[in-house]
Image (cartoon, rainbow, N blue to C red; front, side):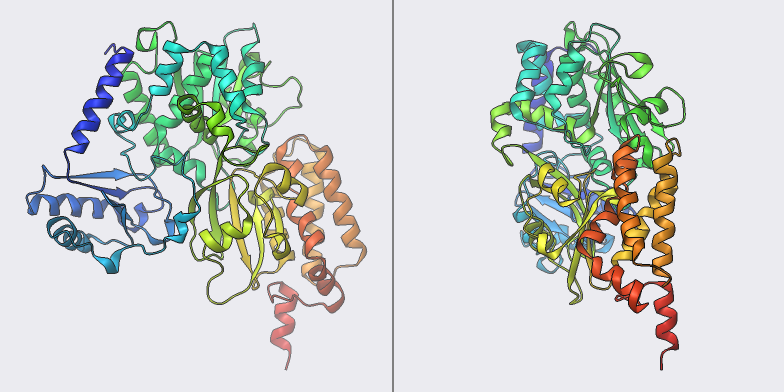
Length: 553
């Protein structure tokens, strides 16, 4: 089908009008978080209930992506009104339809009553999550999707697109926080062709799922962002690098690409313009280091995902030696909004140096775990205690790990720290791929440091000595301390070794892997001292302490 820009705009109007004809819309979350708890059965039960009450013309039932409240799934969002039902069973479906839809009386006892979870969030990247069917491109178009691409292709030059992204202040959401517009400029000015755009959807951090959830909920936002980036830098081919362990994200992206091609939004002469661009999925085998940009390039080229020294940077010599733009999927999903609303609009959100919002997976010992999106500059206290609802079961807050397994453990005294790249780095943590893990007073910080170091030892590709050997030695020292065999000088060795691994490792994995050890030494040194001198674990986690406690009278 050959479509023009005006055809897409017509489809948007017609679909929006069709959706307005429904009196109610029932959105059933069928993300990876809700599927194991019977989301598909709930979806089917709602469809049957709508038929039973003869409401097919008045009520639309849709499968959607994640709403964010992952701990109370399956969840169902009913519009208008934004009524969010939690822990819904197939048996509840008929009751909700009969009471809410037929009689206009929401079932109060099933409603999600925690307004605080959403109160401080600002959902821009996740604007469509839980509200559109990710498997229907018409839903995305009706929500304004692809109008940013049309604007670029019909009204803007590639340079104007890049200038708008520069004006927004958008920084890469993959962890390093490099200015996005500047990176686009580097690729755009390269004369060597062909050029490539790569979307990074490799997310191997324990407890981190923001990128996967975005792909499941709103795949076209990623695709549209990639297309705009390709237009700006002059690329005709793109790859989405996604973990094979994410089957729903793979399925959703595959279907979205198929639909985009069918509407002439991918492929040759998109919307009858001179711009051609297509995207291919590449499945990763599941290695933490594959998330590093040069590791991704190696994997896409068919080699083992191992990093290489830089320079040359991918912007000048990436895939098969050609200029390549690599961006995290969350970064790309911001782009359509920036084009539609302007860079100055985006720059007003967040902080002057760190604009926009950030998606986080909020997990660990917290009352309201889930997927959140917050403006940059919000404090850790607001995230943990207001959005997250604090620590459950009457336990005390002890620390928060920010940035995944190679992030930093920050203590209670830093809860008022602003969430932005500079503040987190100064405190010893990183933005990473968006993981916030809350730790309570039942956890041992030495054991916590060991757990994440052990993960990084297993995930190290082994190419560079500091990462391969240094991390292993750090893990061995931690194990000795946990067994009550530590020495005071071990703390200096851990500190020096951690700084060495951080400073001279080849890629981001080794450069950040010592963070849990370095930050626990910095903020929880007393726990290391207790393990070494008192031969006990304050939290009762470590092996020798548990044995001693059992043997004690």
